[in-house]
Image 1 (cartoon, rainbow, N blue to C red):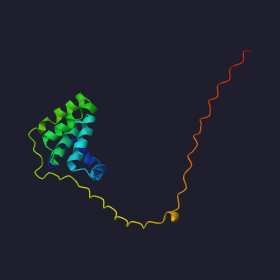
Image 2: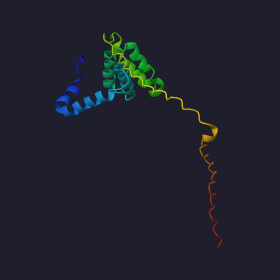
Image 3: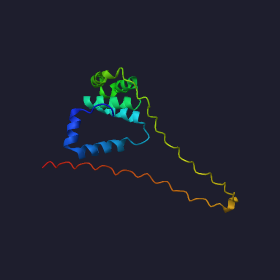
Image 4: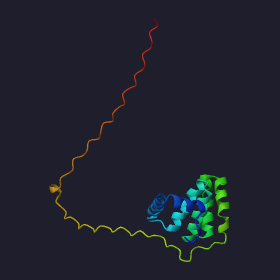
Length: 161
């Protein structure tokens, strides 16, 4: 990514390099699948907005644009959250991405990942018809008798001694 990493991230990377490397590997592994990079970043943007994590909102908005989202798509993803996360949180996230107004999607937008269609099994040849006498009828299942729930026992009345 061409954007400068936040100072806190750089500090943690130098102090805990193994942890940050594992975190980055987990993020890459979780992003692999049928969704395009653009959609994955828009999903992460929505989660960041729901958490009110300003830094994450900035990061995932920039990453979404780098993956091919337009600033309008980023804003639409956030406005679509209003009924889920509430107006105040969605509005705050929209304010945080206000600097994207002039951003342009990456020149080489990531194409949506395509899933290969599953091959259909070959049709089975039609079986030869057997005479009616040769066919064996499958035994019919007997309907299960409806079991009645045992009647609830009434508590014994205390004796009046």
